[in-house]
Image 1 (cartoon, rainbow, N blue to C red):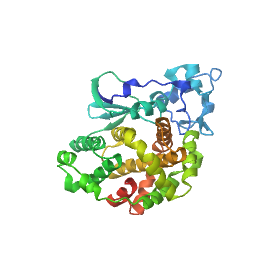
Image 2: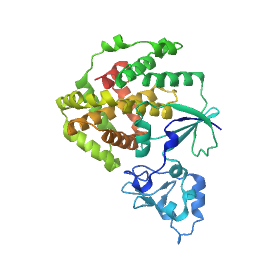
Image 3: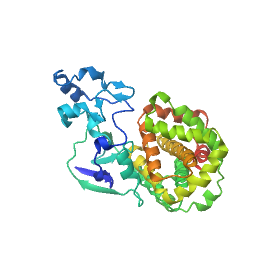
Image 4: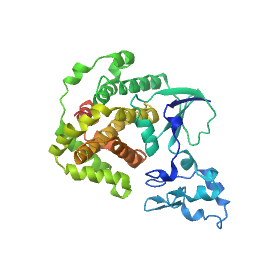
Length: 356
């Protein structure tokens, strides 16, 4: 089978009980039909599986899977890896069949993947190979020429280090919101120098602060927060305390100096996100990526102010816990509807969100 994968993919190995988080908590864990049938044949005196299942998912106790004990899975310990559901045996890996190519990737909701995917200073590169892969739960996409054109443009701009990462997203927003103007000239668009245009854009930092604060309030459901994300949120929120002056000072004094040397982390997050998630059938998919980036940056600014600086461990913790909390909950897509309703789903609206 022909496969396409980012270079970090083959370096992943689950670190199990040494992991600072667990993939068995914080979200609904589904059970596929074949695994559910297999569970019915397991005697209750070996392990009572049916007591821990509700409909097509594992029961949760305070947000943690019924079968998690001392950070280890009782199903795997008792019955072996072959009895894990597709969700459990696959995560954090993701599979997407694009025509005759199987694309392999992984989610930075896993701390180990977050380190592998985001911490490469040279950026994410991709490779092709031929290998046998059992791709459970794979998505399928019948790609058009436009898909490949737009993906090349998106990743090309995201990895263009002539510009800050926020400016790269603004350049892409210019393209996607005026696609009828630029369509067919993507290579020229990619090669253009937008420096003069970007210099003319003045940040609206106070309005940005207010809007992103509102978006976070809109997104959050405290009952779904797990401890790693809650620690980041509480520290950020305590420092900012609704104060734009705190936000502005933290950005200039602590966040910006760190990111001038380490912006590759956010670049890698976005490149990995685009590769995993964008099929270019809807502009809203791109908008959501921009919102996630803006909210992550907001958290990091608050944390930078609180700590009077950032380090890579804290940045990885914040991004990983955010991805786990929000990316994998479909309800977060309603934030784009909220932006449409407020008439911010536009070039001007996203320049406001992105530009500092």
